[in-house]
Length: 141
Image 1 (tube, rainbow, N blue to C red):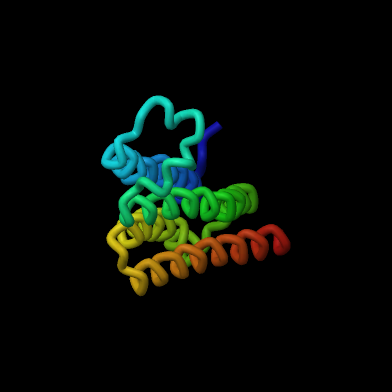
Image 2 (cartoon, helix red, strand yellow):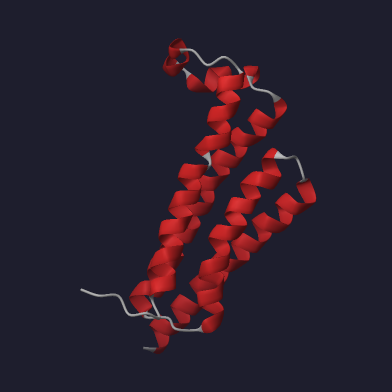
């Protein structure tokens, strides 16, 4: 089965958004390393949170938020795939979302709240666009 070129951005968006979730472990791992992570910490990895530097705590929160964002975004991309959305606005939103989520991690760890808020809101708007366009296409078809 081949994917039509107009639907490829939605599949890529899903894959890239999942990659952002995986990437969010990089700064968290660096923070745990700086906090002298020991094998014994595997028994209760959240217990070491207080040992993390401030930027590491933000990395942990960014990591958790990455999962939350993915659980909203993944169904939206799948809806667009199933509905056969070809709207250029939805395609742009599909590409922009993973980029904003990646930037979100960076600005969260760097403690830039206004930029973090913009990245978060932009990603959420992109996901909302995908839901709206997917539902519109599904109901029209």
